[in-house]
Length: 313
Length: 253
Image (cartoon, rainbow over all chains, first blue to last red; front, side, top):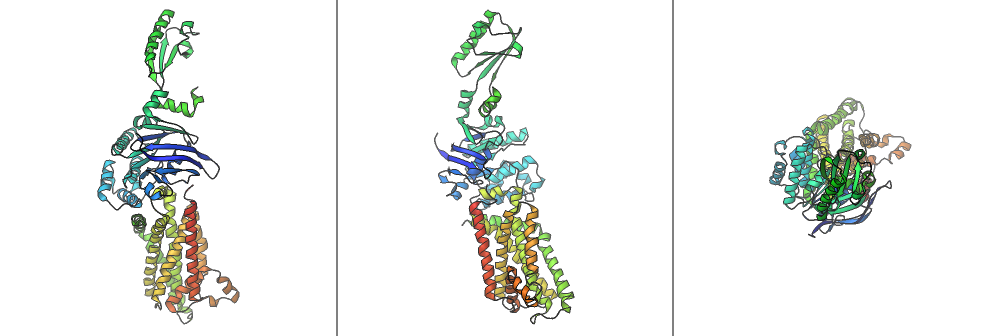
C-alpha cells in the first residue's frame, strides 16, 4: 500500500526559549490506516500534531496533506483534518448541539442538522444535546470534542491522547468508534500513553523520543521483529553457576538461582527444537523444575527498550 | 471568502450577548442613563448653555462615545480572550479560515453589539433631554466607524492579554480616562490655552468632536481632522492585527 495522505519532510521545531521539540522528522501516513504515535511525556508528540494541524509554526520543513502544503494551501489542507486535543477545552456555557454545529460552520461547511444528529447519536450524545458542556462528565466532554472534530466530515482525524482519564468501559467504546471511522475510510493518527491502546488499534506504530522519530513500523512486523519470548523454569534447587552443557543456550539465572530464564525469538522455527533440546539437556544434568511459564514481550517492553534502553538493561 | 465560518463566529458571539443580556445590554444602558440623570437633569439644569446647546443635550454625544469606546473594546477583547483562556482557540487556529474571516467574525459581532447599544442609549437619552441630529448620515458614520475601530483595538487587547487583569487594564486605565478628558463633558474652549493644546494630543477629542458636530453642528476641531484621526486609528489597528497574524504573536508558538 502506498497512498500517502500526509507527508512530512524534514520537520524541525525549536521554540523561542531554544528548546528543540522536533528534529528532522520524516514521516508518511497512508490513507485509511490507524497510526499510533508513542512517546514519553515531552517527546514531541503533541508538537508534531500541532504543526500538522496549523497550531504551531514549524522552524523548518514542510507538511503535505493529501498533496496540499499545510501553510501555502492551508484551506484545502485543514478542511480534511479533524483534531481532538488532549486537554478538555470547550466553551463551558454552550450546549452540546450549538458547540458541535459551531465547529461545522467554523470549518466552512453549510449547516447540516442531519449530519450533526448522526454524529451525536454515534457518540451517544444525542440525549445530552441540549445540555450545557459544564454539566457533562469528563468522559462526555471528551466525546463532545470528538463530535466537534467529526462535525465537518474530515478525512483525517488526529486524536491526541483520546482516552486519557477515561474509564475502561468508555475507552473500549471509543476504540469502537475509532474502528468504525476507519472502516468508513477516515485515516486516524493517535497519540497515546496507553501501550495497549496502540497494540489494540494501530496498523502502524511510530515511536518518538526527544523530538526524534526513533522508529516507524507495521505493528505486526514490529512485534515480530523486536518481541522476544521468555521461558522461565522454577527450579527445585538453586543453581550457583551455569553447567557447561547448558552454555550454548541463551540462559540466565534469577531469584538467587531458583529461576532459569531462556530467552528466544518465538518467530523462528528452530526455537521450538531448541526448547526440546534445552529440556533434554536439563534432564541429563539432573536439573529439575517444579513449574514453568512463558511470556511474550509486549509492545510496552519494546517501547521502553526503544526510549530508554538503559532502564531495561 | 467563505461566509460559513464568519457566520459561525458572528452568531456564536451574538448568542453570548443574548445569554448575558443583563451584563451586555441592560447594565451599560442603565449606567449611561444615570449620567443623564445626574449631569443632564440634576446638575445640568444649573449649568449654562455650551455653544448654544443645553448642557444636558451637549453631553449626549460624549456619553454615547464613552459607552461606545469602552463597550467596543471590552466586547471584542473578551470575545477573543475567552477561547484563549479556555483553550478552545485550538479550533479557530486549526480551521480552514483566513485571518480576515476571523477578524470580520469577532470584530463584526463586537461592533454590532456596540452600535446596537449606542442606538438604544441615543433613544434613552431622548427621554431626558431634547435631542436633535443635524447630520444623521455623519452621526451613523462616526457611530459605525468608531465601533469598528475600537472593536479592532479590543481584539488586539484580547490577543495581547494573558490574564483577566490585563484584559481590564487598557479599558480602565487608558480608554476611560482619555474619554473623560476628551471633551465628553465639556468643550475644550473651556480649558486654559495650555491644556487646550495638551488635550489635542488625545485622539478621543477628535472622535467626540466629530460625533458632536453630527448632532449640533458644533465642534472643537474640524470635521476633516476628526475623520482623519479615526481613519488613522483604523489603519493602525488593522496594521497591528495583520502583524499579529503574520507572526502568530501570542497565538502560535
